[in-house]
Image 1 (cartoon, rainbow, N blue to C red):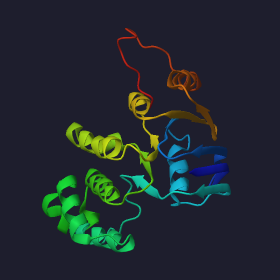
Image 2 (cartoon, one colour; image 1 turned 90 degrees about the horizontal axis):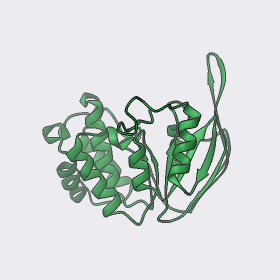
Image 3 (cartoon, rainbow, N blue to C red; image 1 turned 30 degrees about the horizontal axis):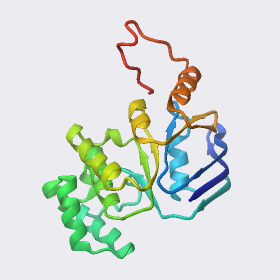
Length: 232
C-alpha cells in the first residue's frame, strides 16, 4: 500500500512562494489504479514526482509499502552523457538485473536502432520517452506512475505500451495522469480531481468528470455530443 497524508509542496520563485499541493491525502492498494484529472499547472506531475521520491514534499508524509516506479517516460533518472546502452547497464546494475536480457528487451521494444549506441543528449524528446518507458518495463515494480504516456510515439507504440501495462501487469497498482479523459476512464478503478492544490477522490468517473468540467468552465461546443471534449 501507498499512504499519502497531508502532502504540501511549496516552490520558491522570483515572484515569491508558490503553493502547488495543499493537504493531499489518499491510499493506494495493490491492484488499484487511480486516475487524476486537473488543468495544466494544477500540480499533477508534481504529485507524481513526490510519490516516486524524485522530489521531497515541503511537509506531509508518503508511506511506501510497495516498490514504486519513476514516472514512466520520464528521463530524469538517466545520465544524458551516456549512451542508451550504458544507461541500461547502469539501471540493471542498480536493480541487480541481467544486463544482456534487459538490453535485448529494450532494443526490441523502444525501436531506437543505432541510436541505442548514441548519448541521450542527441535524442529527441520522443526518443528519450520511448527509451525511458522501455527501461521502466524491465523492473517489475509493484506500482507504476504514468504521466501523459499518450505523448509517447505513434498509435502502434501506444498499443505496445498499453499491452505491457494493462495486460501483462494488470495486477499492479498505478497512478495515471492524462489529458485524455477516455484513457483515464477506461484504465482506472478510482479517480481524483486536483484543483487549487487539493485532491478530491471519486468512485464514479462520470461524477469526477462532471465536477472537473465545472471547475474548468467547460461548455459544450457546437454539435455536441458528436464532438468529444478534450481535458487540456
